[in-house]
Image 1 (cartoon, rainbow over the protein chains, first blue to last red):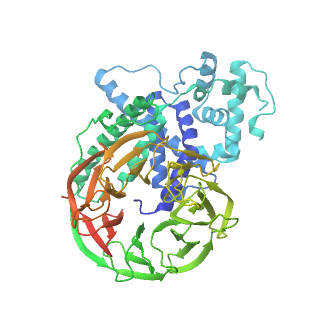
Image 2 (cartoon, rainbow over the protein chains, first blue to last red; image 1 turned 30 degrees about the vertical axis):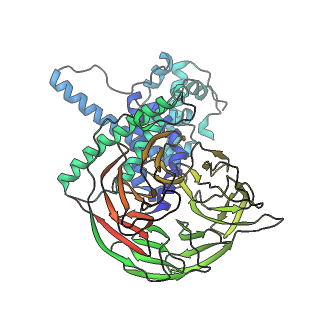
Image 3 (cartoon, rainbow over the protein chains, first blue to last red; image 1 turned 90 degrees about the vertical axis):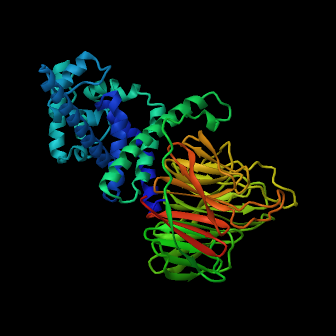
Length: 172
Length: 412
């Protein structure tokens, strides 16, 4: 059926290996209704760019999912802007929407971070990436990522009043 | 982890409480249907837009059908759903029209036995040669002589090579598609202590290895793996059912067709030839509650049951082994996938029920709409007895009766 069975087999193997991780990534950052769209759109990009997938695969794959999420958010913002223009109702706040079920304390602490800092912390904590792999996802140097992670961590410590521990993931 | 901040955040990971359930399968079906759909002809923009809209609606219908089927199957002991229980939320697609192109006669003793498309080439296995044709016009590009005059042949592409296995032989053949030369004959049979083995015609590429079926005179056959880097078998052969034949890679598994065989004492195998499914990573085997010849397309496996018989049918199976649909396709004997359709070749009718007395010009080509799981259009009569079909790049090839029939898809 496929013009290139090797290509198809490689994609299938990659899908089986990583679809659960990509879904979890989307669950942590998208409204429930958008999760499956993120998974499907991510792997359709992967299919088109299969020859570009590097080793290790996962950081690159999550980088694609991150851009897909960004596109999804921009589209939602455009729709919301149109609605706002039509209804002349401007919302008071825009920014990160914490996932449902997050405790108010943690949600507040994460909301207080910059987008870069929050993503650095969540890639390490929720997605379990090493700082080096997480840096690939967000497209910055490993050093820059460690700085973001360190700042994010310090600010969450201050917000939540957790005892600081010098052995952070940033040292891995 | 030793970091209270990270540990605190991990405790509230939203993904820990997520239960995607059926959504996983639905999304999988959606992704694979979409990549299969990308083989649509490059027609005019207006028409293509219409097709994409139709495709989107159809993909949505597949998701609905899959979810409904999964829910319906939950309480069924055999995990099977009668076709009548599947709801079709969309009208069947219009049949694709085919234009007949000049057929190809490879000459004796080159009766085509198996087909494989690879890029812009069509590979045709015959008892004497592996013939490489131009997929678009059927011009012969190369002939690679193959030993032992095999008759029932399997072909696979993988690891930069073409692989040929044939029933009854002892060697797997490896051909370099760039030079069109036989570059390895790999012995895979080690009959000993009264156990006689030979290859089936099943060969597939998955997870970096070549998987080949082996028949024996014992109740169980097996599947043996070959490392393309060394051309040597790897690991312990994996026991499957009796008389393993076709091996197909799909949905993260190897699907092995088992058949009834005659054992060393002359009795038939008592093992029901249920399909074996192998996990390529763990090499674990499980038996599926259906039997037949597997094929992969549109995010599903399609199993031909009672192939070539009047009561033949195609089962559509999802990645978990759930049967999503049963499509009656009398005498179906081969499937291919392309241009948004499942293409089925159906054997000739017979004058007698017990013995095969073929009636000429009664073999047909059918098309199945994968979004409604229905046969669509009128059958196209074939003037040969078809044994293999291949579809790629908007070209459809059928092998049989010493010839290759060629059809091209038209936009109308």
